[in-house]
Image (cartoon, rainbow, N blue to C red; front, side, top):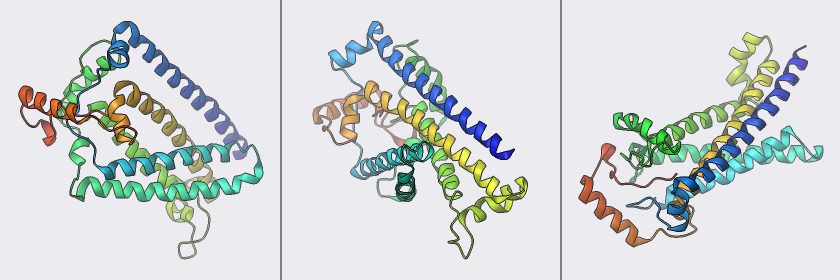
Length: 287
């Protein structure tokens, strides 16, 4: 009975999340074409007028982002292959790729958190959501929905970016937890990570550690799809809303120095030196 229920859940998840991803990708395509009659396509892609930026991201955040991106692609691809193997003999190698990428992602995540709070160029304030951020949420949403032509700009990242990054962080921690909870090898003083992390509580609730692991796998797979959907939106906005700084961030093309100096002068003239959280008011937006 349990196996039948789990099989039905997996089939429904496959269908629902694939439809959600198709709907998300279609919405991004529609959003792009709506920008043509609204004039944003011409402004950005023909007149080449992109948002102002008064600084570049340091090297280490760029490096960590590259490592994160590569490993997340490897995790998503290997995870989907494990779920839908085209050749069963490759399933075990894909699991090893998944484990290695998972380890690197977790180490990279902890490194990024350390950098945000303790490095010389610590930047946690850039991601803090303050009162002015929340007040700007309606205006930012209206801008992305083409209901307004101006986007409130109170910090380096707008409030929707900040909230997305915080949600992404929470999902990564949960994904790391569920991923470790899938390991059944007795590597922790004779106990497996599954027994240590979920066996004593979820296993007790469901009556069996294996059943608990099966439902943890369902959660893990669902989060994998959420990452794919969120990354689709993130990639689209990074390119369509701010191509120049995105190219600079990924090391493809250096953001022009004269534009940074012009943005600094403009920010100082219009708003003073700093806004909320100590960041320049006229600041970079990655999306």
